[in-house]
Image 1: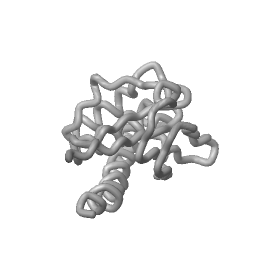
Image 2 (image 1 turned 120 degrees about the horizontal axis):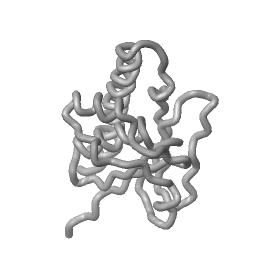
Image 3 (image 1 turned 135 degrees about the vertical axis):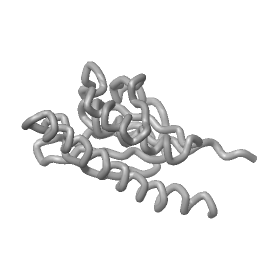
Amino acid sequence: MIEPPLRILILCTGNSCRSQMAEGFLRSFDNRLAVFSAGTAPAVRVHPKAVQVMQEAGIDLSKHYPKTVNSFIDQAFDYVITVCGHAQETCPVFTGQVKQRLHIGFDDPATATGTEEEILAVFRRVRDEIQDQFFHFYTNHITSKKGS
């Protein structure tokens, strides 16, 4: 019998940077996962610098768009992961059916200030942190369960 894919929802506020990058990385690790991202107050579009730095990592977010968490509320998920970081941010709460809730926090690169290069450096740092932390999540929560 073929098992259904694991369903993972990644949440943040705007669904324009961190959750989109995390979704892109998880999909790149394993295309059998059903990965989605959403926000409580979705932005108009995915942040162009998020698209740019993910393209540098070989992942195309150009067709992605922010989605509201409400569109997923009637769906069941194996994991719901919040990625908000700073204390002034309120982590979204998902009230739908969830087997496991996790929080993996990151700074919001959309709030970076400075020169173009300084801002891009923040986006790249957060991208790399997301890649590392979500690969850690993938190896410890997903691949370790496939053999059991």
